[in-house]
Image 1 (tube, helix red, strand yellow):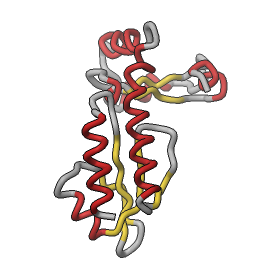
Image 2 (cartoon, one colour):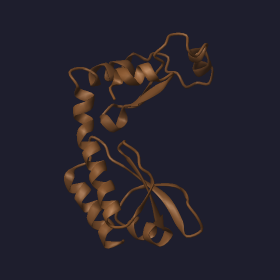
Image 3 (cartoon, helix red, strand yellow):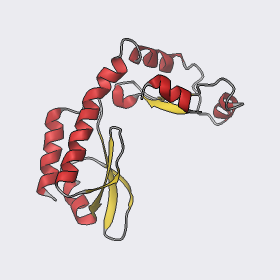
Image 4 (cartoon, helix red, strand yellow):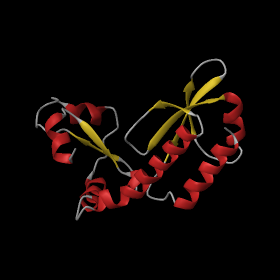
Length: 158
């Protein structure tokens, strides 16, 4: 699926920036002008619209020049796939099998405590009394060495 396909098939979507090296922010894309009446007025009234959005716009303009966004994002996607493959190999259950840089898996609370000593991850939600859903996220800064270290920790604590 291309960005053009996404724009044609969606009413609204967003493009994340920080995991691809942007200073901050996401770009909310409304492909059809007027699709959401008063969107900017509502956002501005709730204090979520920067007064001068040029800086955010410039960084996304640069990210979409010459395929930079896709090049920067490719290592993060490859690392996420390696992590997902390892989770499956070692018997972890995925909570969601996403095609993104985010990996959601179900772990026992005991395993969660063990890996928390060596790894940063996001607690997502309680799955049941003895299990939780956690989230790993890769980014432009995730190295293959980091990915392999995580995989080793997951293997050790399976």
